[in-house]
Amino acid sequence: MGPLIGGILAETGWLDSQPIHVVIGIGVNVYVASVPDMEGLNFPATSLETEGWHNQDRLQLLRSIFENLISWRPYVAQDRFISAWEEHLAYRGELVSISDGLGGERIGWIDGLDLDGSLRLRSTNGETLTVQVGEIH
Image (cartoon, rainbow, N blue to C red; front, side, top):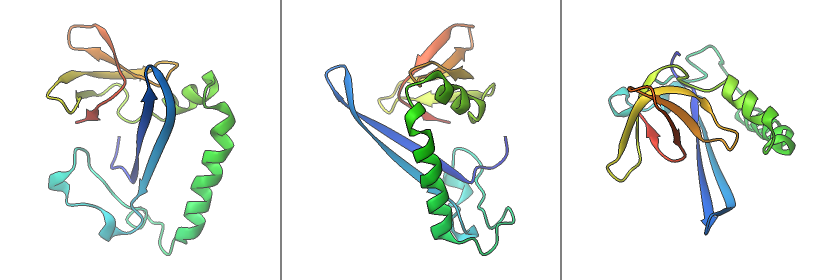
């Protein structure tokens, strides 16, 4: 996989064992200047400008992102959504380290997604792990 143009961060609020809301943050590197210093990144990054999207209308880009999100909303809890997400899953088949933010770490190959959106990771000993929270390195 080549350099990334943007990323998504999703956080879920829970009440006991039930999710009550999801907050999604989306970042897109439009200009070369928006790409962070490579030293602090887990993965290589690029921008739309670097990739040939000169003079991109940022408002139109935002509108396109929202229109696509809205069009997928009816399918979020369905296999169709997970399948489409999995088809575009970054780093599938690649060896990664996933830290849980509490000092725990899991190492393995990204294998795909479960129907609930959890990440499937194949550990170095062949065991399939389910990861719901973490930062990929």
